[in-house]
Image 1 (cartoon, rainbow, N blue to C red):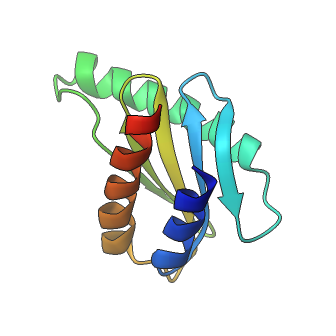
Image 2 (tube, one colour):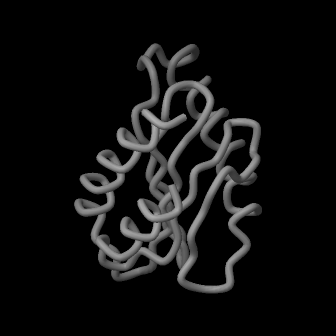
Amino acid sequence: MLAELTQLVNDVDGAWAAAIGGMDGLLVEGHSAGSSDLSLLVAEHAGLLRTMSTAYSQSLGGGQTRELYLRGERLSVYLHPMGTTYFLLLALDSRSNLGQARLYGRDTARSLGALL
């Protein structure tokens, strides 16, 4: 899994970290081009993804969450659920390419999801 996550960071313009996290907030595997705390990123975003998934499917009737993109001033994150247990996290900087993140992230999530 580490090789696929490393390749994902290399393939997406502006990406600096990729991880597989559990919906319980635990880091399964990750790669970072910097010194960021991937465990913290996964833990915080697992909670956001759980909350958004519940709101979207139950309160809003929007169905199952397929992806989530959050953009802040200095941090953007693309999340792609992998079933009900895991998700792919791709951390991006301000010059990131969201189209690449979605395309390559979806492909990586499918291939890694088959391993989990």
